[in-house]
Length: 389
Image (cartoon, rainbow, N blue to C red):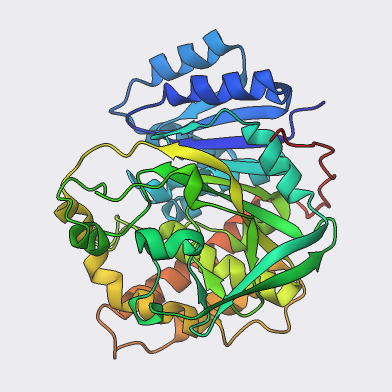
């Protein structure tokens, strides 16, 4: 099997987690498919990261800020280097550029504070992306699906990015059929520390950025998709996707902006991807494989300060994109329509509304950078992998 998958790990702390993921991949026979791309900063021990990859005998590379700048120059996109913010979780977008330029067929996002469970982690994601047949479909009367809906009566949790106006929703479930190739992204969920925003962490009584309420395997049931026209939070800590979605999966510019907005890179990218999927008739698959999320303690108020500038925007950004791109024929066209709506919109009625114009301009530059890289669209081969239970 050729190396067809780029595993993107943004890290400044716990890069040794890669050892556990490599061991899991090797146990289940996927290690020869994987290229591990560690995206880091110059203040980190990049030599130690490279030695770890050598020691593990896996294909991979380490890119700090200077390395990324050199890569942009080498590939003729130095004028678009700003689309990947410095020292931000949103630097996962560099992984998307690298994947695109090197023509990998699949991508994985893995956060460095996670570990795989004792299941076939990579194989389950591959199988999800190759899923065909029946799957649970979820919708609500608020047009939003809580990815933690299955045991909500017990834990009462809403994930980071879920709009406050969409709470207290009425959930409906049914079944839908998907054709092979229709699943373009696979979101694995998490045990231990749930992915919550700062307000909800504070309401849960935790000042250390984690949560008093924890999740376990028992909180999750059947895998599911959100129905057409329904939105959901997409967290990039445990995620696999097909190459074709890269134009519509830009991880939005956070932290390094004049509004001090952070923490919504994967949330808004998930909203935009879901809109594109609805237009194109494809699906984001949710559930297994679970990962263990071991978020390190940090002041909850630090996260709150990063989130507050865009909390109001998060209530409305999905409504803006829900109205555009309906006639698009591919992910780039759908994303371009959303970029135009944000770049040219007038959002002064919301706090920091100009940030949406900033995001829209960066989305346009994202598409331009991909065009400059010159990698043409190609259909991804189907993974013939059956996951272990």
